[in-house]
Image: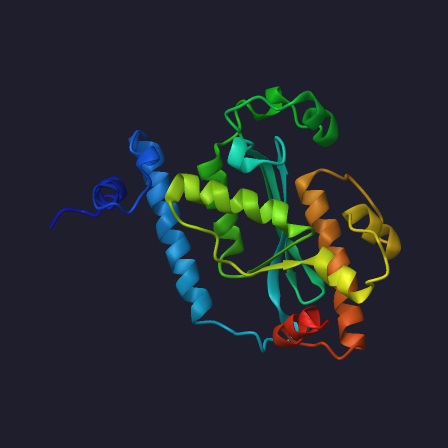
Length: 247
């Protein structure tokens, strides 16, 4: 029996229609990365389906708070990820030593306004790993844990499109949004940004628009929100979804 070769498996998937045709021109190294990522995502999905459901207590929830910096706001028009930061939490507490951060080579120029906002320059990312490599690093870190982000639509959309372009698979992780929770707790406040809510809860702002620092600050916001939810007798994922769905 021949040893299993991820590139051969990749080509089998392509010939059977299991991968987008845009991936056919990839070289063997990239194809191996993508085949590995697809396999890892499938395993993560199975682990999650076999794990705890929505009745898990929020103060025991194992999650990863993450943030992306990008070349713009429109991944469907070619904008790409330029950095990824993530921090693990268990309930309201940051897990000591469990963080990840990486620059990403977007294979396109970073606009001057994004360089100014993020302090990430074209020079900094020219030798950085490509998107597929960083996606592998990120999902190895996340495993089957819940994802948390502030104003998560932006980050979720970039992750989902990056995955679909490179693997044909979509993001299936549960994603919780600290902005949505905060706005539900205080519907009369017409404020939405991470800065607004950090100020509201008295959380120190440090290193904004650095993906890892933003993830850590969002984790601290998550901790404050859990305290608010508990005070309203919202103690499990199911109860939180019910709370968010109330009119």
